[in-house]
Amino acid sequence: MAVRRGVVTLGTAQEFPFRRLLETLAPVLGPGGALEATAGEPVQTLWQTGGTPVDGLGIRARAWLAADELARSLAEADVVVTHAGVGSALAALLAGRCPVLVPREVGRGEVGDDHQQQLARELSDRGLAIHRRVDQLTVDDLLLAASRRVVRVDRPPTFELSP
Image (cartoon, rainbow, N blue to C red; front, side):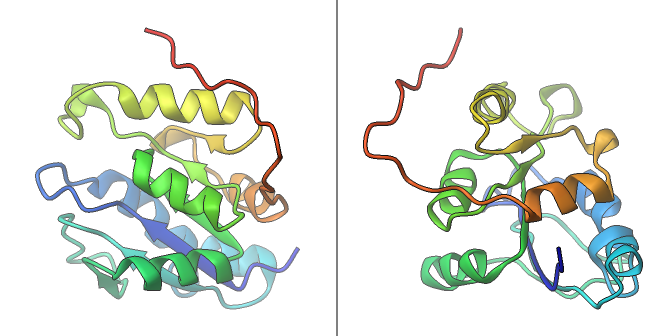
């Protein structure tokens, strides 16, 4: 599967930067990165980074995007990687993408509680997303996500988060 367009979105929370994810993805999705080398084609990546600094990463990022621009970019993307925030995950799903969800970690001060872990696990268990930790993320995960799409069903199963 050709991967020509990617979107990385970290949401809008300024108080919780997620630089670890960008440091992992820049050499994969950035210009001349590992995904480009594997796929044999350049990958145009939109980096929406919120309050996360990008200095020294060699990427051209935008802190914020209008909701309609983000929705359009997600729909046009071949692969989406996002923190596991509810808004970002739902936006990717609404665009028909199977996102790679990478939850922020409480122990690293990246989020206030474990809701991102819970959401990522639940969506992954239902086959709607790929759940990875920052240190587990691979090019193969991105290719797998790019090969999948999410479609709406008339009667979805009940969605319950465990305590």
